[in-house]
Image (cartoon, rainbow, N blue to C red; front, side):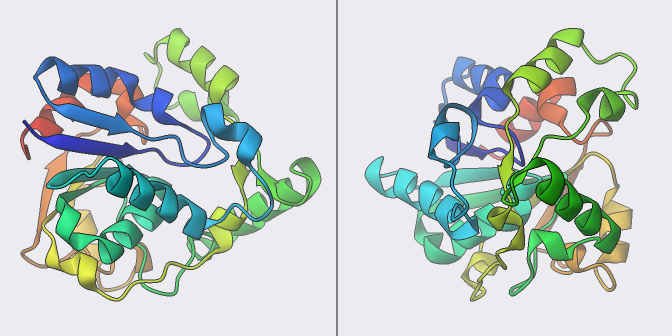
Length: 243
């Protein structure tokens, strides 16, 4: 039996992992999908001070209080880029494998908001205009879904109804890493890019700076940036492959 911990990206909670969680549990594995502070059913806990350090602590506390070891720690988007490397850096002995879903880990000292100047400016403007100065509203899901013409309408409905604003401090807090996480094996599930692209970008794109070398393996899953909605069975099979 393998223990999986699944961390969502911006705007989402544990609910987003449900099809993947069910598939892994059906194969006899232990699965913990986590809603970070201020997200999903914990939305009432969001404050302007909810930052990346709070979310890293959420996961560390889960590992400690559930006494989890030999964990396959999976992070999607922000959950991978900013959260799981910070967790692994602080508790490497509890983790067997890191899985980054359609992202790479941010370098030490860099924040999510530092990645992509135009996107940052647009998001900061939305925070100021629509988010009371501290929350990033969910994106226009219908517009994003136009790239996936066969997307199940139930998924789109769930995203509209359940996605919640992301505390902006989680995007502006830089990651703090010592390098301990780099002792662990890591897998990238590449959805909107390929292994060849990721390895090529390692020399020039900060988000991919750590993604060369022989400690990385790749599984390509060409689909939407949110594969837990478009290809949950295939994503589960990839995760089963590292059990």
